[in-house]
Length: 156
Length: 156
Length: 156
Length: 156
Image (cartoon, rainbow over all chains, first blue to last red; front, side, top):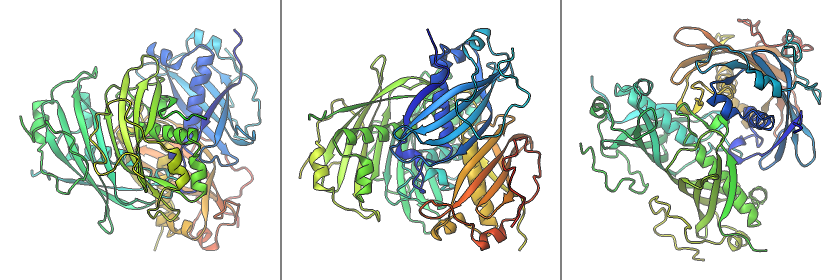
């Protein structure tokens, strides 16, 4: 099976996500990125539900987001998601959010996750998980500051 | 110590709670009621954090809400909260939400909670919890349908 | 075109919706019902985005929910949605939420909406909107108290 | 009146903010920072509600967050907030979130806001707003990448 290195997940902005500026509230983008990450892992054969059942937790340690154009109620939003960097206890995801109709870039972001065990102590990513997560170069310029100066790309 | 039978908790509508209608989104009231319930339990000497540490869960089994007047960004909202009915495995809370400046009634509601153990199976409310939770007549007309026709008030 | 009188919308429980009880937080069901209502209106040819552009607002005036079985992270949830009752300035929706894999009923609910104009004053539902919204008998027993004793079904 | 250059706002983690990892969900920190920013502006004499009534919008253009220690249900959290940098159309806020009981640092963050008019077009921060917002050096090491390399501190 060929796993796409950049996954695409579609969401639609619902009314609860709007604010009185008439746009999607900025914190909601983190939830969209979480939804896209879950789908990305599923596509890679690493269901997050099953990872948790095995005792693994992926906890967010850093996020950075740049907002370019507002998303509005009922807009279809495509979230492109990929693994940017991979280390023994950490994985970084990159994201590009686009308006699904006109392809305009809405926002870009990165999220760094630490591997934790069930007691929330730092642990190593299981070998089978590391195997299916392949780091790729950013397909779009993220425009967020480099998050991980000391992390090598996919250095194992 | 005298515990007030109707507690009062103050929140302020934050920007994330508004929607593009320019008012607080209707689902947020359930969160305000949850915050008020936690404070009510604390005042009664039954910290919900400690109840959970003892293995008890209070899970919502029913809610009903009536919205009378919108709450807006930055409005201070007073949540009055009380126990309406108490049974061996269930407790019903009543709520009145008011604009804290002009005292106008914004919404009323009821929430029924079932006592569950750590595996989420139905259980009895511990005796010490039942002792501190005293059901009182509704201090305001709720205007929501009677939720618990077969529950007697405080029948133990 | 035949519009289904009961629409079906699928969502998947995301991580942000879980709470530390390990289940979907109860207030999230109101958001799911909002998403389903938007899809129901779209299927009926009455896009809510366009209704708002025309100056109409549908504001929630009452909700009632009964929770039967918890939804969990990553569960697919099917939301069945229909118009229960229709009046000149109000429309009531009914909802049944089911686990999409085993068809088990998770929750039922009703939401009453008032028609408002852009200044949030009560107004009449436009004739073309009333025409496309057809009230139907509840396809499942809701088990929530009758919300609208004085409203006739589809009385125009 | 002396306005503190670093404001402090207290929130308490409510149940809706927890996730099934048993900690406060990471996107909630952005809401806490929004609440703290609103309070900071109020202390400075620039109520955000009034700014919006005058036609100004402050829209988030960038965020960065570093999570150090989880916050848990019912934890009291102190949010320290300050202006880091100020330009004609932009203001950057810094944040440090601490457990209010043991003073432990939970997270740090930055949020950059652009000044927009009511039609969401870029505009200048009003002179009276710029006057009350004084940029100060970070009181704690943020540990997030420099967000605004080309912005001078308080360069007017």
